[in-house]
Amino acid sequence: MNITLTEYIKKRNGVSLGSPKSLRNNLHRSLGAKNFSTFWNYWNPIFGYYLGIYVFKPLKNVFPNAVALVLTFIFCGLLHDAVTTLYRGKISLFFTIWFLIMAIAVLITQFLKQNYSKHIWIIRAVVNLGIIGICFLLTVYITKILVV
Image (cartoon, rainbow, N blue to C red; front, top):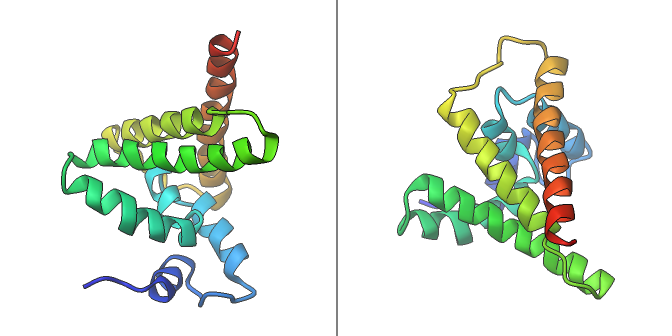
């Protein structure tokens, strides 16, 4: 049985769609997640809902979960890049590369069974933001090399 968008948001944010506490809860839960993989369960639940139903689930019927996850992140990056390309009038693959690197980070942290749930919220937030930041810096470095 499929979960509705409203049910999914309530599950992820703890409050209903449109609640004034939605953004606060989203940031608190995602940044304070016990690991980088769980961060993505909470981050942007509306987008995550549609990516899960229309991209990840169909892909995991064809590919192993890890491949489906990477392809879902790449698809998400391509969507972000499409918006950037339309806005700037210039092709960009920055987000695609960034999301690919973050997908690899998710897989690495899952393989290492990373769990910092026993740490206080601020430590969990710093670690999750740190991983995002490292992935961002790697993306900047890679795009500079590729765009010579």
